[in-house]
Image 1 (tube, rainbow, N blue to C red):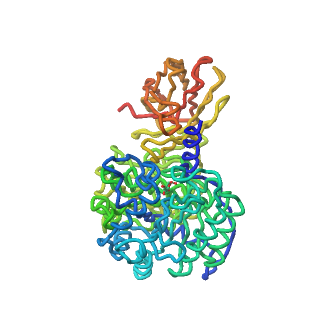
Image 2 (image 1 turned 90 degrees about the vertical axis):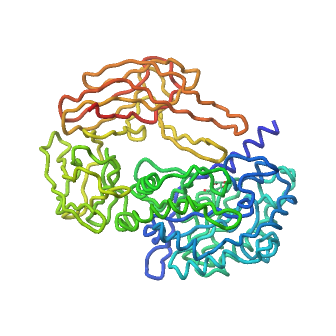
Image 3 (image 1 turned 60 degrees about the vertical axis):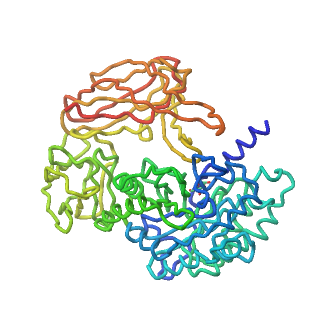
Amino acid sequence: MKRFRTVLTTLLLLTAGVTSFAAETVNEPGGAPRGAWLKDSRFAMFVHWGLYSELGGKWNDKTYYGIAEWIMNRARIPAAEYAQVAGRFNPTGFNADEWVQLAKDAGMRHIMITSKHHDGFAMFKSAASPFNIVVASPFKRDPMKELSEACRKGGIRLGFYYSQTQDWHERDAVGNTWDWPSEGRDFQKYLRTKAVPQIEELLRGYGPIAGVWFDTPGPISPEDSKKLVDLVHQLQPQCLVNSRIGNNLGDYDTLGDQEIPRLPRPGLWETPDTHNDTWAYAWYDRNWKSPREIAERLVRVVSRGGTYMLNVGPDGKGRIPEQSARILRTVGQWVHEHEEAIHGTDATPLGPLAWGECTARGNTLFLHVFQWPADGRVLLPGLKTKVLRAQLKQGTEIRQCEVRELPSSDSAGPCLEIALPASQPATLIPVISLELSGPAEASREQFVLNGCRQTLEAGVAKLNACELESIDWMEKFGDWKHAQCAGRWHGSESAATWAFHTVEPGSFYLDVEYSCPATDDYSEWRVRCGETDLTFPLIDSGERPMREGFGHTLMRFRTYRVGVVDFPKAGLHELRFGPTGKAGGGVRVSSLVLTPVD
Ligand code: GLC
């Protein structure tokens, strides 16, 4: 029972809380509301750096795979023993100017860094606790100070991560259950003597701070969350507080770790993402996302209206891993080339696009083409506003593209055909800019286009007698993944239905992306779309409902090829998917995928 409780507590503290954005307007000096700048900083650098970086994921010769800043917790390292690591933490390779230069080279516009993570070690000079880098380490320098000066010089905003609830160094804070019992803690004392004074130190001693980034609110009370929000705003009225302060407070939403929403989302928000599978440096983790993957994830977030904050994990010497830095510089070349299509842009006005994503700025749309069409044309359906000009940027060269209107197939309205060069320009993601005659007016309906693979997401289906489930799970410890699925089916009445238009006749392979528990192995399913009417079984995908040690599901998705669907005519179609009988209630479908047969 005790073990179960510990697992539950750990999970509660691990789960990156998602709360809704509570808007409160305070004007910036220029008259803009607090945080308006976040829109101009669509790509940011997150940095996890602390004592744990010295350990790099290893304690007593054992590697703890998973997020490395949690090593003290994972290895149950007694606070006194962990504190001794400070004695050998000497990051002489740290160079604030180099980090700022890297952020700029990467095309990032602000930096958010861990000033104190859950281990309780302050990476700044603190009078409130001697457990800080200046007092307790041979380094003796204050890297937050150096970074704040380098940021100011470099014209980059700086914010501080501060773990407000968990502090494993303190008996009275939350989280350390291996040194001290949970009972008899005086959380108010911890707040009064450490958290509040340290947050004050950060807000008083480092110039204007862009934001204080709180995390894992856990059991913090609404009064305490509010007290910290007020403290930040009182000392620096323009300073942003993220939603992980807890209790539905904060100036903007921080989504779950690595969570990219499927659809545009209103308000100010960000997605924090890892470059590999950990936030802090881990000696073994070289699972770097490639420049192309990063650029795609960035564009997905920005096209839905958010800011993408990508993390780097400097090592115990204060060096950002060179492989990670090199990849970021490559991304940066692309961002700098397409700055106007990223920073300061709004979410797409269009529905899901088959070949990529769209961002908007005033009367200009930017089409980010992920799948370069083999037939040399991009089809853009649903746009009702007149296009004055279409241009493709190729290095320093700007190429005009011809735009023509395909005859309208049905009520969905026009579909534009933009002629492109046959070979993809040598850039991470080609961007076409469309200058419109006025503000974009568009249909948000879905189109299935020949020549590209497209996904029918569960999140945009009409659901009957089944539900949309948002599922979060960890692959390695703390390495969160997210999916939105249609699930909780109740028999043959249950169905997910997608309505979409086609603009030309075509044939597509139809694949189902699903997860299926052992109890629903061999359940029978049916797809109907026009002439197509097929039944098929879905087999166990191997998910584990309660994974040893994590107390959480390990989801496993599989792909099943249902068959080929023909669309002999252009027009509106409906694709209906559901179980044929009672079995299959636990199956979760994240999407159906259509891939051109030719
Ligand atoms: C989680 C983890 C933490 C990490 C953070 C980044 O909440 O507890 O280690 O700092 O996510 O978003």
